[in-house]
Length: 286
Picture 1 (cartoon, rainbow, N blue to C red):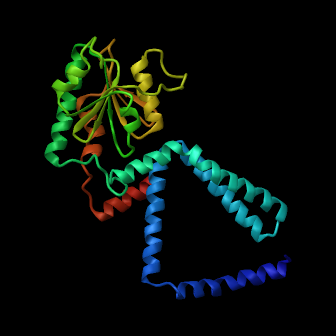
Picture 2 (picture 1 turned 30 degrees about the horizontal axis):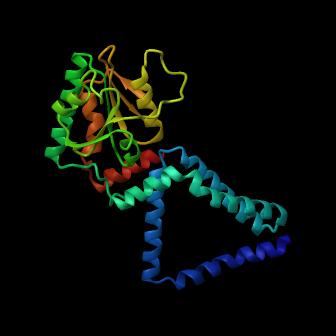
Picture 3 (picture 1 turned 90 degrees about the vertical axis):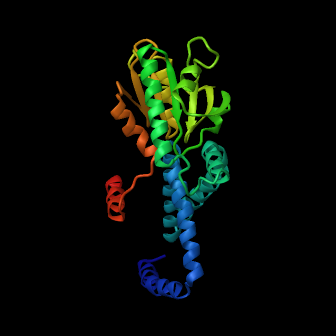
């Protein structure tokens, strides 16, 4: 392809684009809108996971493949097209946890909605019970590990423990983490206003730069927070200090006010105007 033919094909693009737009109907626009929503929700589920870097790499390779095809660079185009084909074959293996999580969201009806939101009364009750349980266990130095589920399903974690399915209460939580009981050393998983499972096993973090003061509970909490969007609450058995782990980071010495700030966005939908929503969305993108 010479420069003259390339420039001629570039000039024809606006006319071709107008031709395509003139054939679009209402159903076509609806079709495009639904596909956009699906891709957005898929991106949203992958955004806080390690898989998002792989997705960006695949998209970059696809763009390069189209560019080299346009420039008629046949050798490099052939190589990249074969590479992309192999990547698509390997995707079900590479993204197995994310695909399973997406199917769980769809099957549970949570693909377009946040299932953890509660009404004001239930949200207040859950936050109060959690705060009371943590304070009482902290006072007597009872170790505890509590996972609060957000958007990403934790059914695989729940299967490693004992199914409970009971309402969140300080009495139940204190019984679960009572010293020398079978469920004491595992984690309890909370979904909405219910404790789904207890005695669950969490993956340990591989971060070697953590303080030696952090024991197995803290390392397990950080490890899970590196892999999903859950909020993990920890009570130290040695010091009674209450900590919170999220997004691979741990925050220690959490008081009641700070705990409520962490929990409120999980259980209560944020009430804001359309203008505030747009402003927050822009701030997140910066």
